[in-house]
Image (cartoon, rainbow, N blue to C red):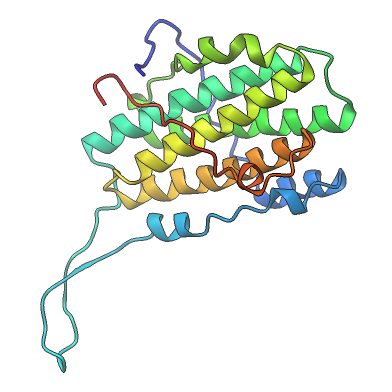
Length: 226
């Protein structure tokens, strides 16, 4: 999957991402708080700093020799830029869903929350990358646009698939990042987007545990040549 350079998006980076507490309150208000719990705590550990230790004897403590960099490498910048294109596509797709009359007030509030979250994540990545942020739509937007604007079942299925793709993509990127600052940011985004999938599956009436836990086999998007 390549990055489309034909659609520039103006991202305002002045608004921070919505806090988890506010997100949880909105979900709890419509009875979906339990469904929004993500079971991906290992991602936090993946984003934490790790060290390389030298060989030592049984009685000598290991000595730290190197630590991962905090700032992103050139390769990190490219990967995080690609992640931003996915986030831009996601919030633009949710605009398509919000333009329909498929949802009741509570469901529309959830869809609007997810739209705002993806927009905030695109802004956060833009602020992190500065001038290196690509600010463009990922081609997945064109692939999913019609489904997001379809009937309720089709729209919910498309939204769930988008969240699954975002989780798979960001997981793939997270495994390649060198700088811990970028990894921590992406991990925080990834965990909430897994919860998005859980809530969408719950709204759609799913009872399959693998689907509710966003454990479906979604294909990660990759930059051209990736």
